[in-house]
Structures are given as C-alpha cells and as structure tokens.
Image (cartoon, rainbow, N blue to C red; front, side, top):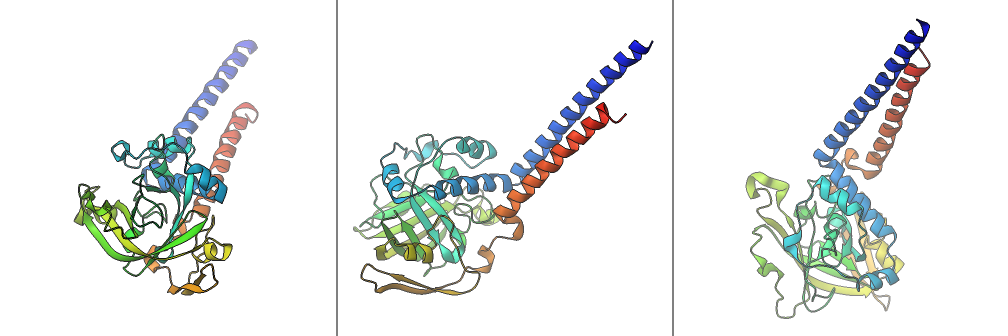
Length: 317
C-alpha cells in the first residue's frame, strides 16, 4: 500500500512539474508575442542591432565593409516584422559610416545597400543606389524603416524635420553636412524621380514611410522624403564627430546648444544653434536602457517563480 501511494505521489509530482513548465512556457510565449506585437519589441531589437554595429565601427572597418558583397534590389525588401528583425539579428551587418540629424534625434549606422541577405534595413539606414558617393556631385539617396515612433529607431522622426535642419553623414574620414531644403510627405513609391541626380548637384535624399499619419497617407502608401544640399565638408576629428553626434554613443543636449564644427584649417565651418524638438524626444518607456532593465527583471522574476513552484511540488508538500 505504501509503495502504491509513493508511486502515485511521484506520478502526481511529475505531472505537476510538466503542467508548471508547460503553462510557464505558454505564459512566456504570450508575453513575448505581446511585446513584439506592440511594436516595442521590433524597435528594441533594431536598436540593439544598430548599437552593436555602431560600437564596433572604426575607420578601417568602414573602409573594409565598403568592399563587401551587398544587394541593391529593393523589390526583395519587406516591411519590418518580428520575424524579419529576429532573423536579421542572426546575420551580421557591416556599417560603412553613420548618419545623424540632431534636431529630430536621429542617430543611425549607415550601410551599403540592403545587405547580401537583405538584413541591413533591420540595422539602420541604407544607401539605395550603388553609383552614388557620400559628399559627391550626385544625389546621395538613403532609406530606412518607419517603425511607429517607438524612440529614435531608424527614421521614425524624419517627418518632424524642418527645412534648415542639418543632416550629418560620415565615412569616418570626413563629415559631410547637408542642409534640408525640402520636406515631402505624399510621395508615392512609384515616384522614383526623387532619386535622380540634379545637374551634378551635391545633394542628399532621405526616404521612409509616411505611416506616422495613416488616416491621411495610408499604411505604406506614401513616402516621407527629405532633400538637402551639401553645405560643408570637414575632417572626422573626435571634436567634430562628437559635436555632430556621429559617435557610437552620441550625447545630445536636452536644451538648446551651439554646434561649432571646424574645418581642416581650424576655421569654424559650421556654427549653428540646435535643439532637439520636444516631440522628437523619446518618452521614458521608449528608453532602450529602461526596456532592457525591465526585460532582465521580468526574466529573473519568471525563473524564480518557476523554481519556487517546482521546489514546492518536490520538497515542500
């Protein structure tokens, strides 16, 4: 009789353990799906990808990365999704520089084309055409995802830019400064003429989706396009990279501040007052560090709860 009770008790413990583990797995899966379904998860992974590419970027690596195989076939690109960002996280991307628009809190690594496995859009901003040169007498065309205003991921804040704002791009040899001249929000995907060169003019074109207002522009039906002219070129010194917010971990002031960049002869090439617009500043819950801490705390509490339940089943009858 005692042996039967012991066997029954063991069987109950095993089934209770299986139930706890199964319910725990389903709960964890549900929370994960909610996290990614909300958009925060996608933005968080892309921001992680960007940080990883940024922190390992050096001048020599940027030069090396320019020679890597890539694709410029936009037809193979897809809208951002949990599947695409998680897939891209497993594939390395090779940055060739950085881009910053301090006035609207945009800071991203820059990549050549869409990547050999179309992973680059899940890491940052990409060049759209293979024959265009940064700072050259051409239209330097860049594109990036719009991800739903969950912080400064990719080009979420581009629609907040104004004519007169400065766009900084660097290959870590030089910094090229463009001033925005035109902002458009109702450009159709078929209007590829925005990518054309204009009489060998040195200009830049940034493109993202106009999904910030779907009632007006629809979902994926129109593009936000910012175009600007080259106004300055200077050496990518530590001083200039820091002030133009083109470092791996840019520091931007919450208040109005003066930017004084110097050219190779130490003359002030750019002298401009910059302030991040209020609606371009991430809310506290969009802060990547805050989200990372919440994720760590959730995982620790979840594991401890499962362990406590298993201890209760097996040892605290």
